[in-house]
Image 1 (cartoon, rainbow, N blue to C red):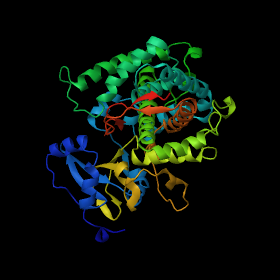
Image 2: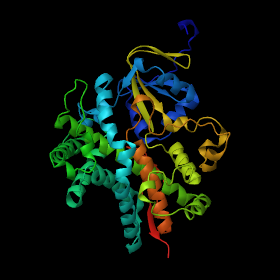
Image 3: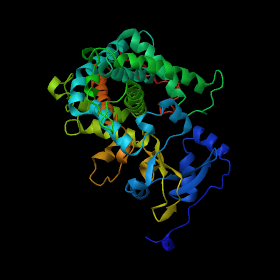
Image 4: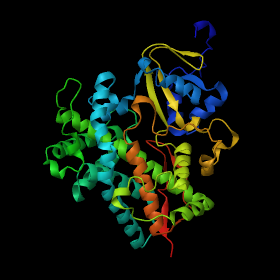
Length: 430
């Protein structure tokens, strides 16, 4: 490839990027509208930061195939709330070393260890829904469930300790993509204070005896890039990221999946035919594979379709360390590139705006989905999220039938991850 063959980088013409940033935060079709006008790659400005948006398999593969030319990047609000030690804010050797340590919490043996606890939490939610006298917000319960999996099975927390952590974590999460100015009473200022409380609690978790730490004993041998054990301060920030990676993606995917089932009754009936043939709970030794694609292909197709239409990570960022080619366009050095997953997953054949899970069972389907990000920085919580989703859907729908309450807002808020605005109010059918 030579510079004589490149195409010019299309631009929106935005200068300060103030209006662009406002629309980006409010309009889920922000990227799609500009892709339709400018093509699969365009540059704009976000609060003075030059930013390049890309969609489509060709552009995404080109980007991820040049790891030496890019590094991880997050908005300033995310950087501050995650912390300087966090895996998300590290690059190079420091990133790889910490990723190896934290990845132990998501290994196959770790997932097997967590499965009984996840099954118990599914059964607890089922009983809560059965006993409820009034409709319950299912999306909110899904957030609590996803958080409980991390807090209970991984961190070893129960009861009041877990509830306090959840309350602070909700405050922290809501400000991840906010304006990073700590004005008194602002979401960002509240999140900074919640962050201090979270880290203080996580520090106490790290000094507890190993046998009460849930899965944290797996980190006991973690070494950094210099061969020195990671400090508690460093591990504390990794656990904060762990909470987000294992919680937010799962809560979003579960909420969006249940929403689609109740908005598409024929799809729900199609899935229930399969679930009625599955055993619940699974045998302990089979828990991690009982509902995999070979045993539950319809469930797998629905999960894939939900993750296609409403990926829990709507996009991810990379910073260019040098100029690089993407789809015959030169992206200059020091540009933030956002991979627009939600837009990419709707780009192509005519019916991609339609929720049709059967497409994933068709041999002709060639969709390249990366709902948890891609490359060497793919979401660490991916395997746990997928296990939780499958156990929750089978466990919940095999034990009861839920009816959605009409006259509520089923549209999705987008940040920090897609979730029904009115929390998906449901009741158990008689």
